Image (tube, rainbow, N blue to C red):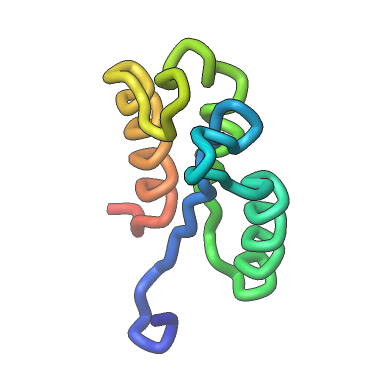
Length: 94
């Protein structure tokens, strides 16, 4: 994608409640560890990072839904604002 001249922004995965175990058949490994690996690669490739994990983590109990990876309206508003800032930072100044 970089060959196209596009400015890339990578968004980290948001936290998963209950230590990643939502049910016996819905288990996530370490989101934090996966994000660390992905961010390291994106930095090597000079790709901008939108760290939604760190945005959500301090308030996940307030903006998340119990036993679910989805968020409340307030959560999506918060994440949407973070995305807008990250994308805006990559746009050329006019």
